[in-house]
Image 1: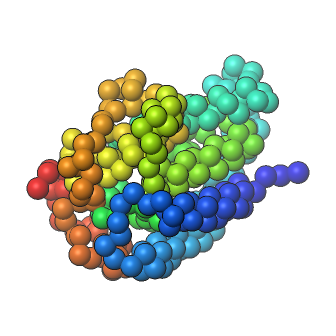
Image 2: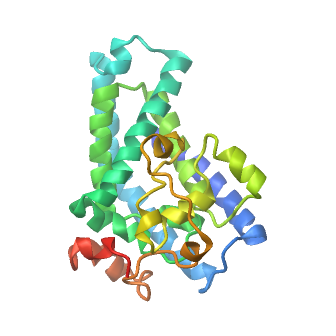
Length: 268
């Protein structure tokens, strides 16, 4: 029986989205300065649009490419003869490593930053921020996954589990919640946490250019990009530019094509 990767992601996505919405409502860390319903309407509209166009276009192409790679036995995992649970775990680890570098490149390469900065213009980081990606960034992201698939050669099952897992982790660490220090310390032994990822969304370039990991925090530790945000930095999230218009559709879509990409790299 085939695996519908996109449907699997959607099922877990809505379950996690609803659960984290309840958690944020009960124990949120940062106050919302505008009505939450406005953020939900805008970001859900973005998510629906992105889901429809990617499912009908690039997602189909990526899955077809995965089948080609799998049928030809291409990729490191095939060369190593990995299968079953070992191959699934290996795919999650390797693809999370690739995702760390892809995220980092989105900050370091001016052209990619033009699109990724749309995600960072959100001034109130919560679970809906996970939905806030420019269609152009998603297009380039799928292109990157085409390369990852060719290099590693995952099975469809492993790819589906990774895609689902990375979606759930993104929802989790964008959520407006926090943990007591003793639990935060334990979670950080392996995972990216909401507190650390909020630091990645500060106006301060010191913390924004860090905490790139999605699932495993080891990549930030290994490559020296782990940043502990301080209280003052966490007071102001988002970018200095576009703070009054970040929920306007026209501004959202046109943002990558306006201004100098390097301008938003500086602390203002």
